[in-house]
Length: 556
Image 1 (cartoon, rainbow, N blue to C red):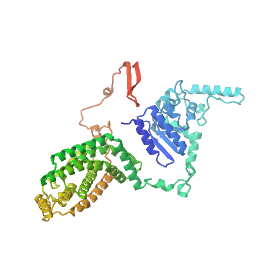
Image 2: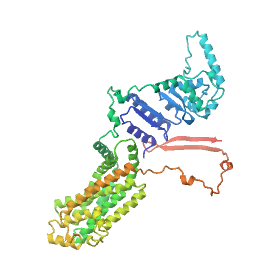
Image 3: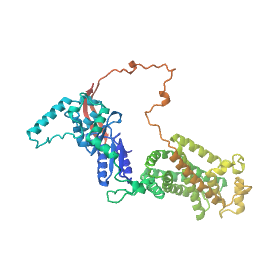
Image 4: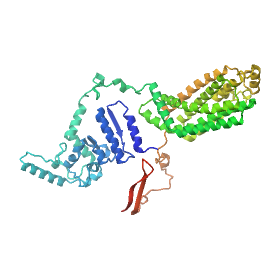
């Protein structure tokens, strides 16, 4: 797995790919430690200066190290009131002029957070501030006005101390004072002025390189072309596949083992029913592999939703890219399993028959992967995917022509025989064998008729192999289009944990439970601990790092 900081860095890298002069981050420190937050903010600050971009970040209870990285801050209080906007270095002086004193040992970030909260009542010392200002004026008078206090610069935006009330401010009064201050009036004035660059009139400005902005690129929903989006999705999925070497080895071992087991059971058989059974079992093995792999696609769906919200690429390019990235794995499966079975069982020993046999297996593997992929796009959970996959598997097995001969399927079910992909591939594989040079036309007709593979009383001919591809290709496109539509129009996101059900929260008149203030009472307790240790595994190597060593204390 990856840590929260690593995930945020990945998201940061994704968002920085946009060619935009403004980058906004909402509560990027949630779930991160101070070091990770400061590291991310340092990267944003560096890139903002390098690429001439404006970066706006909202933080809850930021650390002093994080606040020090900002050029300007916007401080919000209860009710969303803006109580200060301006340079970060002048914020403390601004509130000091309003009568709020920063205690010794409290850093600037905690002081600003306290002023914005109800804790401001403990910091309001108008008399002390007035006394200090009087002392400063006396010192300035003694210096004949030639020097100013070098240790603390008075805030130029706040009103004088004598104009302030005798009690702490409310968020509303804070907001009114700032609006009437110099910076507040300056902001209001700039809001009334016309834009410096009006894109509707051709004033587009220039980038950090001195090049004019490409207005049309900002109007496009997707910056990359459809082909490029498919390529990028395919490349990403292919890289993820190559990194999972354990899965590749396990799949190779599984295919070799299954091929040897099936080939050993039907080794050099000359029984026609055995040929039918081997081909059915091979297709069933492919379907089971596709069905078991489908639930794992749900984990990648959340990544698609995040990218779709950012307009990275359309849903169809994502579906096609993922499908193409699985082609190497499918080829590996078909070659290992199919080759062993083909030559051990003893099918027609011709190059054309062998490669057509592999092509049909691969086509069926690719088609079923997209068929089960439709479930992965619309199902809310892995359980639903497995249940839906079992239904698809059932219909394909029952109506493919192996368990029930095609000529005895009732008329009201025969449409299922022509609809399921397995029936087309299974029939094409049989025709590849029994329409080869190893069998005469009379023998092939006799075998196909005996197993019910006839159409209007006549056995299927070799051209039905082409009809198989004529059916699979449109079926494949329909599955991809359905997956893309489901991903684009229907979002199956899990309900966040910890949120109560609205129906359970409703209280009716018939409820016998009556709440009272006594129900909310609790008994305060003391918590003590002795020799507390906390170890974590090092990110490099197998050793452990001790963060807390024999710590003792008590909370009252």
